[in-house]
Image 1 (tube, rainbow over the protein chains, first blue to last red):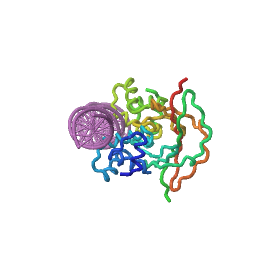
Image 2 (cartoon, chains in turn yellow, blue, green, brown; image 1 turned 120 degrees about the vertical axis):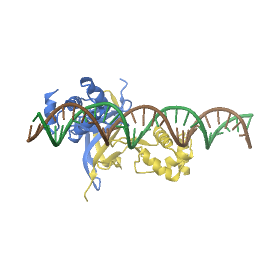
Image 3 (cartoon, each protein chain N blue to C red; image 1 turned 90 degrees about the horizontal axis):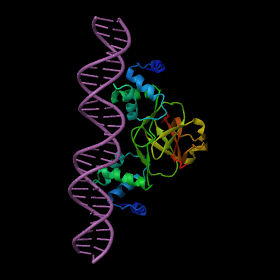
Image 4 (cartoon, helix red, strand yellow; image 1 turned 45 degrees about the horizontal axis):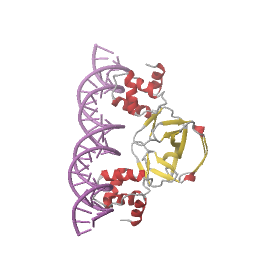
Length: 133
Length: 133
DNA sequence: ATAAAAGTTAGATAGCTTCTAATCTGTTGA
DNA sequence: TCAACAGATTAGAAGCTATCTAACTTTTAT
């Protein structure tokens, strides 16, 4: 039971149950971009008393409170990313694996305004494959 | 039965059955970014003899032959886009609605190479909401 | 015309996410 | 401390989306 995680949850008005702390301890510190299923498998290793419903509830709770981001980049499954500050993503065409790219990895210049809409965020999505070498 | 669509399918080695032409007539010309379910509902209006399996088969076939693109931008459902040339997308946070943005709507400058990976494509994803006005 | 290949169908199946109702846990105030 | 209430968790059911299957129909080629 990580005290820092407990404090962080409490600071966001989240009651720090054992299950929530276990989920948060993993998903807020990983760089694996896990799916809900992956979170369930991983966390169950350290806390066997855990249901899938709780995993989904907790993930959605963390997303609602802004501690976690939900990404729909690869077809077919949603993954989670604890880096909520602006950054870009690279998606492996073959494996679907997602990698974070720092904000300054891409120079984005002028963005044309879209009449009638307000832009909240921008990200660049790169797709490709692992090199031969 | 649109003759141009028939020719286009044949030119890509696709046998032009009534069902496939009906699906293609809609999905290759729409700017609605429909989901598979939406395609099914729409096309069934003009061709009632149509099963969902055929819709999925045909959509996947069109994607495989490069006539259509599959987009995973909003959580929860995949949509299709007949514009296969490079362009960007705007996603409405509230409705999930997707809009195409022309390639030159955003100036993308330098892109840092990713060691060990080859970049195949790049797109900018903008998110926001409809304006008050 | 006929046989082989390809396409379509309804229904079954599989995977992911949410919902439900019951149970359990934590918190609060006397 | 302890009762009572709110909140959290659970297993299983249910809802969706997408794919698979096996039978049937259509098309193509001979």
